[in-house]
Amino acid sequence: MINIFLPAILSFLITLIFMPSLISYFRSKHEGQMIREEGPRWHEKKSGTPTMGGLLFILAIIIASIVNGIFMHNLNPTILILLFILFLYGLLGMWDDSIKLFRRQNEGLKAWQKLLGQIVGGVIFTWVYSQNFPMALRIPFYGDINMGWFYVIFVIFYLTGFSNAVNLADGLDGLVAGLSIISFAAYGIIAYCQSQIDVAIFCFAVVGGLLAFLIFNHKPAKIFMGDMGSLALGGSLAAVSILLHHELSLIWIGLVFVVETLSVMIQVTSFKLTGKRVFLMSPIHHHFEMLGWPEWKIDITFWLVALFTAITGIMFII
Image 1 (cartoon, rainbow, N blue to C red):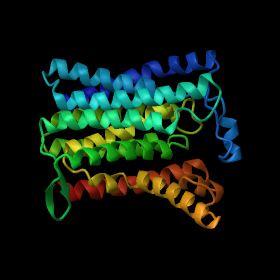
Image 2 (cartoon, one colour; image 1 turned 30 degrees about the vertical axis):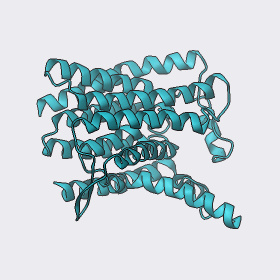
Image 3 (cartoon, rainbow, N blue to C red; image 1 turned 120 degrees about the vertical axis):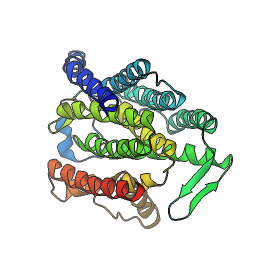
Image 4 (cartoon, rainbow, N blue to C red; image 1 turned 45 degrees about the horizontal axis):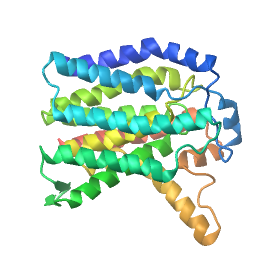
């Protein structure tokens, strides 16, 4: 247990100690978030808030995991492929954020560029995974289905889908940080119960870094994680569920992310087919904002839902 929580503590301390300096640096360079024109008008006051806070907690997670792996002689392919996905998807997000910041536009990377990077990550992850685990998908209440190389398509879809889902949910101060803490903690417990200590170490290192980040990201946020943070967290969350061989459990444990994504899909489809919108604004957290809910109320409500799905998910699996 001590070996598991030491990386969490180290990740927490690195993020906590160095985040104020990162915020000061971004403020001195006048590099801040560009707020979407389509978003709620009261979000305009957030314009200029430093972003790319994901840079620090990603580095903290990587350092904590590698240091622990070296000292505990546990630097194996599983922990390395998790760090690779965290780093690669974070790099894609950083590229996206950089375009928005330095070119003063809110579009970022083209969709095909982001997708290409996510696919490359999925292929590399699957190759490493196939060297150590069977290419089988576990279906709840049924068992394993050997998918062969079709599993590659599933992994690419899952990593891409959940990285984008977490990215879509990153629209309110502290929302994604809190949701991710709950989801990674849930999988950390599952990994520990399955004796997959390397995965548990990674999960709790993420939890430690995000707990420190949330201190600066809760409303009113002093810094945002940016696409760098959200894409990295989403891809890593999917990778963890795959390595634990409870892939589909993420649909329940990460239900809030799924609902956020579905709300966008429903909104777009409805508008294209009928010219009418189902929600006042999507993703769905903006719908509640338009209803007059304050951000803290939405955060807490969504966190409680995530906590319920996480606890029940853990109970079902272990």
